[in-house]
Image (cartoon, rainbow, N blue to C red):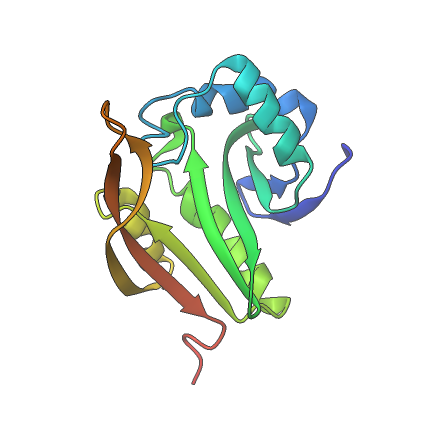
Length: 179
């Protein structure tokens, strides 16, 4: 077994900490304009991906998703610790693996693990235009709690004015689905 933490395993995936040999696979998806279209960063250069990998290796909040059959990093899930026993969830996957259920499979395993470890609430935020993201959250049993209008910007226009975006907020509680 390689060094590093394994957070969970599913039938098809290993959810683990990042490691140095992930650079090429990470670069493959963080350099893809379509993959990062809704992220707060632009497509990365190889050097930027290398810096990002260093950061990812230093935190347990970024979880690498490895496809067992190919021994390949295909994406990542973010589980950031927040106040009041809450976590924020996010995910980014290589577009070559979209539509195969890997995001749902990895998020389900990590949500289950988080709730069994005492987490009270998990929430995710996404752009309303990112239909794939909010449909995934709904499929995972998250409920839309808010539609924040023009509450955030990642970029500015050529005149330096913010390009405002809306945000959907979804959440799931540890008691959801329990009677």
